Length: 186
Picture (cartoon, rainbow, N blue to C red):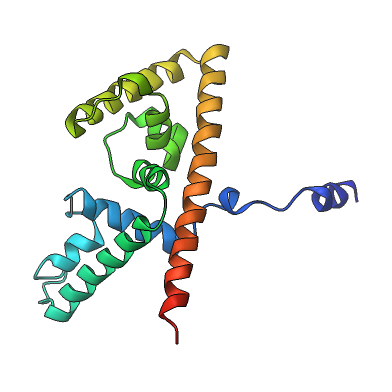
């Protein structure tokens, strides 16, 4: 009885606590894999290939459908603030994070890595940004290895901030997606 009462008194999970739907998750993974021009493991890459994994030829219509899907997702992202688009890019862009960091932080890894940067010295050039991210990821890996109270507190705070930003970005993306679909209906 106590367990049932405690369960009833707990607030319902927020949208962010539930995470993105499978559809949104797959859509954003697909888009950011295509965005990075690393198409080998993405659906987008397979759609653009002239042959399927089974050796069947793809039709021109399938190529058009993949291009259309890419542009629709891109238009949803353009409808949300740049900050939220950047958060989604950090969350979904595939990067070679240290295994321990990726395992500990999951989908939030890229966001936490970016939050760990020094905003005052953030470089403009993309290649340098990627290098700074790699350096930050290594620092986070060291913090995980050390595992002291200070390190746990810093990681907990970064994770909490990353989760809040991710939740906001997903909610805005979902709203932009819904708004787009309701505008298309007669």
